[in-house]
Figure (cartoon, rainbow, N blue to C red):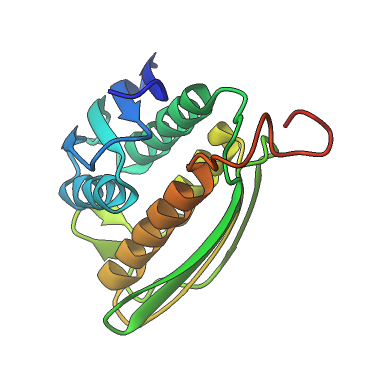
Length: 195
């Protein structure tokens, strides 16, 4: 296990979450949120970002999927923020375009400590399994807010499964690139001296 790790727990009246993250992992996962498609997306995110990730979430799925997906994003974002610390030595900026059949997602990120989120695109179907499609956008917003990311994302396609999966994969690859350590760099990647 690397030094860039975090364990975060969060309990509210709506969800109970335990999550561990190793930014410098190999893509190993153990994910259980009660939403099959969301589990698939988190597993894909970790696999393609080479993050080791465990997530256990007990949420109020008798209501809907909103609190579970939002709160997991909050905890995952918090874990990234904690694991990256002062962000010394990281590449900081990255962008990726990832296709999945007819769908293409683009993600640009600045691991800046300044949360900004912009999204362009629509989802072709309202739901994929037990996940409401628009919650993919909300997941990214909550992740960016809590990880301190400037994150711009867009997607086009004809199948919501492909559109959402391309977004999760593109976000993972972009975060992997942006959080890598650049051996040439000393200290925080900012002219201000801190992020």
